[in-house]
Image 1: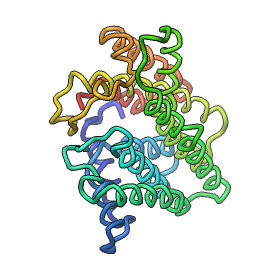
Image 2 (image 1 turned 45 degrees about the horizontal axis):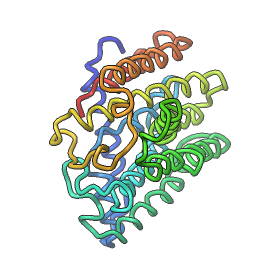
Image 3 (image 1 turned 90 degrees about the horizontal axis):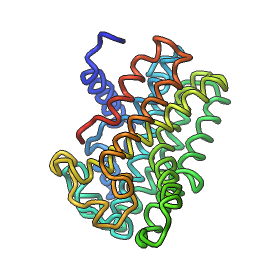
Length: 297
């Protein structure tokens, strides 16, 4: 892995995911099917499906065996984005440089499109080539990390608990911010890693190492997002709005750019250390960790 072209590697994996998504997505002409295809195939780095692949490959299982599970995670991720963009949430007009789902199809269709992707994610994961007990465990992981105590909890804190920051102590705000980082962003990254690993028959030690890795790169990823939201080229980001517009609590607003970057670097260091048990087999994970905090969109 040390001699690979990392960007080409990610691009090839993303294209592999895109081809599979085109096969799995419904092809009828209903508004909901059109909305599902539009939202899922609008682009994206496909990092979460790639994490499913990498975790499985780390434990000796080929990507093709976990391909449905990888696409299931992308379905669920896309559903969260469709709903995040709604007027009642972040109220965004653009996603990846294109009109958001509710701008293209209307609010009701966007809500139902997200609902459909959420439900179909659990159906799709069952098509993975693995033992039934491992598939059942993967379904539980996806449910736990995306549900009301996982991603939804983070989104609720991020969306509903806005404003009035000057009235709260920095200690309280740091605790709230970490909760958002872990639940809203890191949760689905951890889920992706654990799903790939469980389908490959991982033991508790493997899962713990991948969970620590995923949590830390997830936090670093969110910190990078917070910084990019203010400093990046909006054309590269493919969106117009900002967290500042919505009075969101972010690493940038709480710590400032320099301290936020330092904290991201510290989480990357912790992530890399967590995978030392895998030796050289974890090289691609180390490169991904650096990418998560150094990307420019």
